[in-house]
Amino acid sequence: MARFNTINASFFGLFTLLGSFLYSNRGSLMTLYANRPGSLKEYNILPSAGVEFEDIVRSCEDVYMNTDEGWAILSCDPGRGSWNTVMGTFIDSSAHPDAGLYIYHYQDQVNAVPIKLTFSNFASGERNFHPLGIEYVPQSRTLYVVNHAPNGPRIESFRITVDHQEALHIGTIEHPELRTPNSIAALSPSSLLVTNDHYFEIRKSRVLAKLETYLALPLASVVRLDLDISRKAGPPKVTQLARLAFANGVALLNATTVAVSSSAGAAVHVYTSPSRFMKDADDIKLVNTIRLPFLPDNLSVDSNCALLIAGAPYAPALEAVSKASAEFDKPDAVQADRPKAPSWIAEWTEKDGLKDLFVGNDFSTSTTAVRDSGRGIGLAVGLYERGIMTWGDGTAA
Image 1 (cartoon, rainbow, N blue to C red):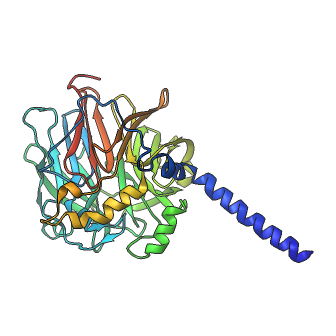
Image 2 (image 1 turned 45 degrees about the vertical axis):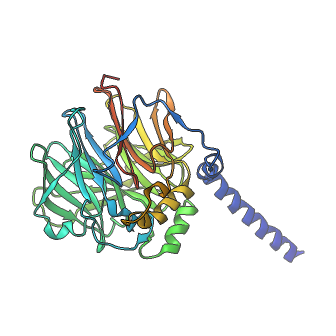
Image 3 (image 1 turned 90 degrees about the horizontal axis):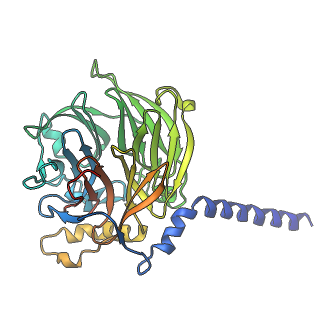
């Protein structure tokens, strides 16, 4: 009888763990069924949406949009098919000659094209530059860029001169707690929020990193970096604020509220802090979870306080594009055969909830969407896509 009770207890424990796993991963598991090939319902309410500049930029991951002045900076790495430390691609760590930061004066809708910023004081770093998330601080004209360099992740800082399309490298931030930095949001000129998308680095342990992803283990983190910009020396002070599964995009909804996307959890978590995240970890608390029908990547907030969310409807399709990308980057590859993965762009407001804007294959592997509501212009970029998607009629929304 004792053995029978032990077996029953073991089965009960396993069923409890399975139930907990299925419940906590219900969002991402539903995407595998609802968004499978042949089942995804394409949808588009973006006015005049189309893809531009396919021959100028590709594989752009993040966008910063300056709506006051009408320009945007894109973080692009055409070598992502050979080196992607998030997806686990380690074929060739050499920086692609077109990898870099591109400025796009979108307010000039007739003549503007993305222009690659010229680096200065960054000769050695440019050879190892694999840009991901970016954030700009207008007060200091400083652009912070996550760099998944071959010799370890770090954050690069640049002083941007918009008129001359120049980026002066002013520093590199490295810290043991920046294990897998992905996205950045500036609290002030001297304080940044940074997401670490994984606890286990895939370049060190592919098995543990994949288990962390597929089991949606809440091990990734949001940290605050306090920088001593007056001395410009020494490591930053790092404070861990929250843990969640596959922390990805981060954006400030207002002075005391931040949104963080959980790619593995198919959700965006909303945290609040009465002191603008400037105290210890106990000062931040989860106040809302926005469940999504897709896997979110980066986040942005427009001037109407709407949260824009871009991401992937179907993870296996994104994985397939990631694995095939290097082959299709070869000169003799037939680009018409290049696989694509659908994109999903949505917006969320506390008043109206979640609203889909774009779902489909006309633009692939979306990671970031931004919008200038005053000018009625929007942009989106894709992790392995050529060009950028633009939309809008050029009038106020």
